[in-house]
Image (cartoon, rainbow, N blue to C red; front, side, top):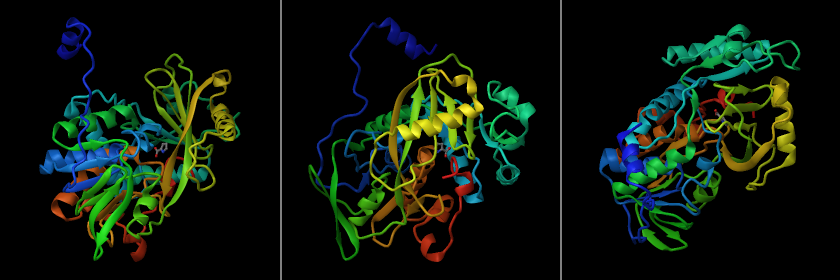
Length: 412
Ligand code: PYC
């Protein structure tokens, strides 16, 4: 037990301190970050910590972490398909490994391993390909077969009985799950301590430009002068970009997820099946956290549907028939900004001072630390760091796409 925890226990109950302050909205900031999720907060944190840029406002139209950061299934991994994607997400995993100590906040990162199942010869081939590219980039991934899978997930049906029997899996030991709210709160608390202003219930209603250069932001609480705006939103990225007349190659689709009642611990690995379209993990509370592919239509709706849970449950039960009587407790949806190549868009845009950290599809949460760190570096130095250069806006104009569809959660 930590000394801090022991002291708190012995000192008796004290009212909780707010984790960040409510600040007045100033009429000018050096940097305005739109979106109070893990990406925006991480960028604010790194601007303050690494670059001593603290005259920064994070604007969030609802509450911190109310968007994708609080709606994802908290899976962390770096077993991507392209060298660019692998290197990028690998830095993120490493930053997550140090996060609890760095932020002095228990983010409950559990590196329990991540299995992507292969049910056909074709997907086994893709897993071998991914394993090789991962290993070349120094990332720990390898293909394993049912005898080893059985040891990692003893309750999974590895017989010939399921409609799609398991032939093998890409095993990625550093992958795992984390407490997503804690990541948001940890970054928010530290950014606040360093002088960043966090403004909740502050909706951006317009962005002002002069001669193709950002000069300010309009909000429901008043106008702000600034020369740098970072669009770090998910779900609303195209609408924010439209405010400066910029079109993003993004389609927005809902993604649903759900959790069951708590069960005794029985699953100590993250299981993903691209063919059966599901991912499943067991949280530290014992709940099964489950999701599937994005809804098959574009929409800004965050309604949950029966259709979704019926389809998901059918697929999960194919491999875990013993869960048939488990009850669902909660279901929710978030919005995903899908790009044509299933990679994000980060960096400068044709509008001076308007930067983007968008297009995170269903894989944004796991990139929060690295995108925050590297976007902060870009803002501070006015140079694009090599690690994020492949994800620039102009790759769509130059035709240099970074095709990650084969490794983007489940087959969308
Ligand atoms: O990319 O690992 C992933 C993921 C899991 C759920 C949604 N996306």
